[in-house]
Amino acid sequence: MIKVLFVCLGNICRSPMAEAVFRKMVHDQGLEDEILCDSAGTGHWHLGELPHIGTRQILEKNHVPCNHRSRLLTTKDLREFDLVIPMDADNHFDIMEMGGDADQTFMLMSFAPKSEAESVPDPYYTGDFDTVYRLVNEGCAGLLNYIREYML
Image (cartoon, rainbow, N blue to C red; front, side):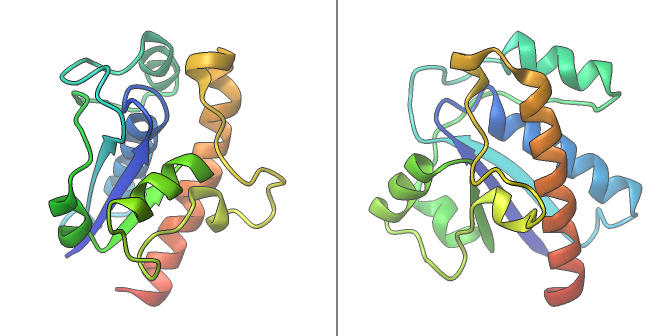
């Protein structure tokens, strides 16, 4: 079983969106028995909360189920997950500071080489959930292709 963890700051916008989108892609390809995913945040501000209303709305609009409560990234996560996928450079830095492994930690947008975006901007501040959804889809599709080609 390949375990994938998506990470952002508060675990209410980008990482639960990526978790939900990726989980649907995994389901649609019949890979639920081979790939597991979750998400977490590096900050504690929203622990236990549902995803941001903007995240929930864009997922509902695109028929992507989401059942998540915000949680904090732990060092145990860094040992248990095969791939740790931060949304931006700050998240990546925080993961490495916690003892993350550079061989298992990759920015989501590194799996979308045709995209000009290097990271997924935080819609908590920008309000642009549509762009974030598009970027998350691009990154998750590339990530799933990577896992199928190199890890399964």
